[in-house]
Image (cartoon, rainbow, N blue to C red; front, side, top):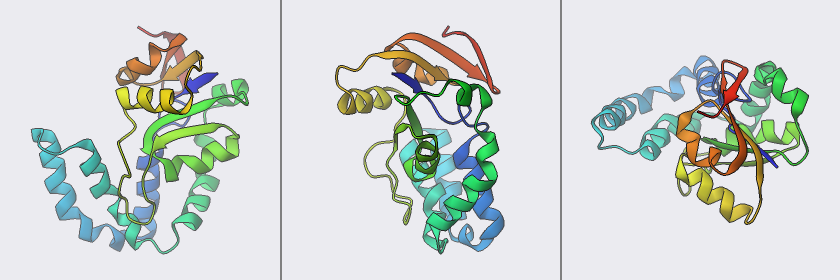
Length: 186
């Protein structure tokens, strides 16, 4: 099986950021109540006292005030599908796996449309709460091993060196930057 990070790898630039901006344009009032908490948690993250999980939950708390998240996701993917990278579409296989730190409710429609499997951060699309752990760094390996025990990774692709734990599982790993597959993993 081949395994891919999603944001800035298969999708460029970042689906979470794009969805957030998409919703901000349509529902600016959904963000106002979250701004003070977001600023406080953002400062806490910079100071090392707030976890990435708590910061993400605060950022995505806006979904509570979006009337039809599923409808917005469908519309979002309709107008952002062209950000799926052509190099991936040319090599996509049925046994591919996307593994992402992004909220699963954002990435799942793309994975389904691509007809590939997905492991991502489990987030409630009605509240923005993460149900479990943020799927990042070593957590990607833990979740991969739990869902696919004994599976071999032929190739792994990511834009970030923070995915080195997953890259180590692969027979071959590649760094992706700005829609281009670069040399093998450093």
